[in-house]
Length: 140
Figure 1 (cartoon, rainbow, N blue to C red):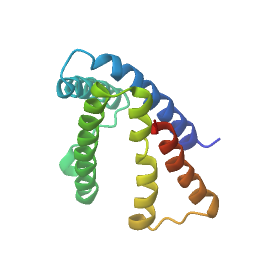
Figure 2 (figure 1 turned 60 degrees about the horizontal axis):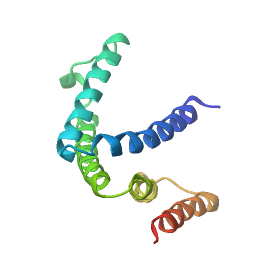
Figure 3 (figure 1 turned 180 degrees about the vertical axis):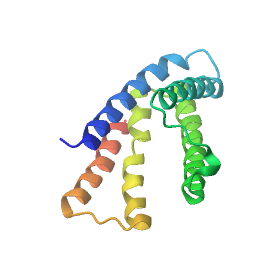
Figure 4 (figure 1 turned 60 degrees about the vertical axis):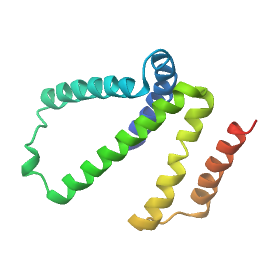
């Protein structure tokens, strides 16, 4: 199995754990504070990881286009986390998480529209099933 598939599975596992852990974590504190704490933990963890792997490069030495898109990605990640934690405060994790994972369908559509990626019929079917499955989970 290619490394990227292993990391993708790890991403899904950890994202699933995130929903449950975050639901408990935002119970008695403001969602924005919870997001800040999460961000600090991630920052410290990544500083240690990058340092131990000797991967640090000064940002001004990086490709400017890459840097702009990483900054934009960081902004959208922050906005996503703020919305996610606020949603978890008021709603059940079992419904908030699947709605959040509609990001999969959004990413698929955006990758086709803006990155020129091509999907076969099975990939389109899978994307449709993601959307349908989300609606089935959230219907009351």
